[in-house]
Image 1 (tube, helix red, strand yellow):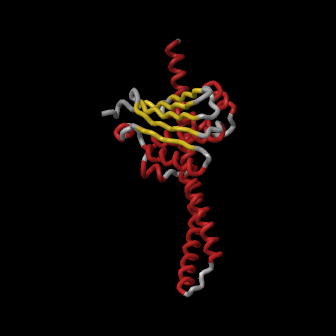
Image 2 (image 1 turned 60 degrees about the vertical axis):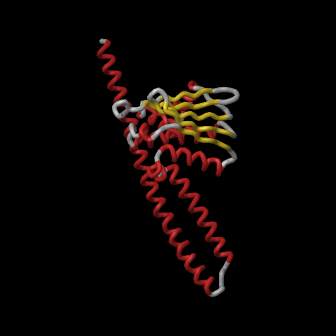
Image 3 (image 1 turned 90 degrees about the vertical axis):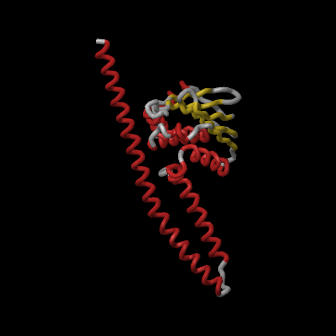
Length: 238
């Protein structure tokens, strides 16, 4: 009976993992579709700006420059740049695909400092060989989890300073976010996840299960932290 119960629990767990996996894959496909649509919308604007720049060049040769028109085009270009930057982080992370997990996280931290009234820092001692034990999809899941953690932090903690560290410890990758804002405990986070109607927290939980990872929320008066621990794949370790 005990073996039968254990077998049933294992089957239910495997089924849950498959459902989570399908959910994450469907989410990624949807994001790719949205990104393509945005690409189709942004391209015409860029082509228009290119045409306008050509007109400005011709007018400059005739000493007939229109500063107001150039200023309008500059404003439009700035909006396009910000839109593309936002899309890159939230949808298809092309920067991630080109530069990898460590550089992408460091770049994200720097961009947050440039856009918001908040200061942060990033540190990593992980070597490339250790990341090679993970597939691209697994590394992308880690990237998504870290961004979801940080986005929740910025929305709810009211912190003014944060730090992100990425270390190799006891055959695991350890991502740790510390901050000086309002903290949250494991019990409170579990309650929020269960009662949440949005996809953010549920997607976060799904990715953590797929990575066989563990997340711990530590609430403290002076400095709170969130620690994500992802075990390295022992079959790929040199």
